[in-house]
Image 1 (cartoon, rainbow, N blue to C red):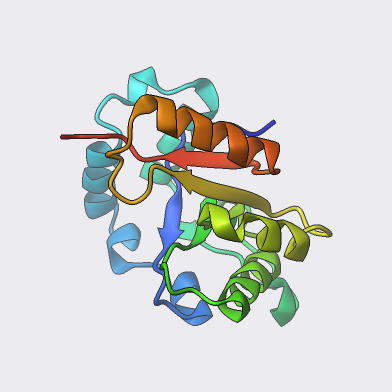
Image 2 (spheres, rainbow, N blue to C red; image 1 turned 90 degrees about the vertical axis):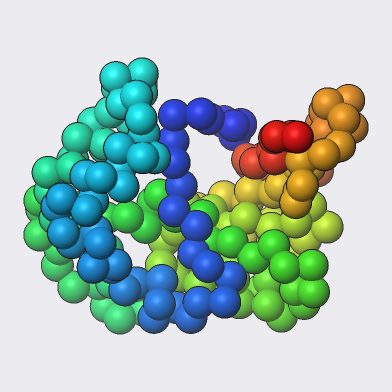
Length: 177
């Protein structure tokens, strides 16, 4: 089922990036020392991760990081020791000025590249659900976005209404003030 998990980090594609940018692997990820340093910043207590997350963490520390090519390109063979990052990516567009065609394009790219989810504002939930109805891509929405400054009661109501409306996942912004 859906829900919020605290043991899974998701790579978010920058909303301004093109499809090609999403598939370009950062040189930092290809350098084992830099990758290890960044992973330890993201996961300061790896022993507290559940078994699946810890297995992925250990693989990211030791194995080459790649992505599989998109379905549209014919899907070239991938080395069995590489890690396919696509199932961990939430393709995200949270810009308040995002238009319906932009959301459609986001959903289409997520389907082509086999991303885990699209992440959109709650006002775009129905559109994303309809566009992704025949795919395995999940729909994630945000609550308390962007500042997290609303009350817990307000966030609870927002989350409940988003789940009832069909959200597969909800990313809630925490109040840090």
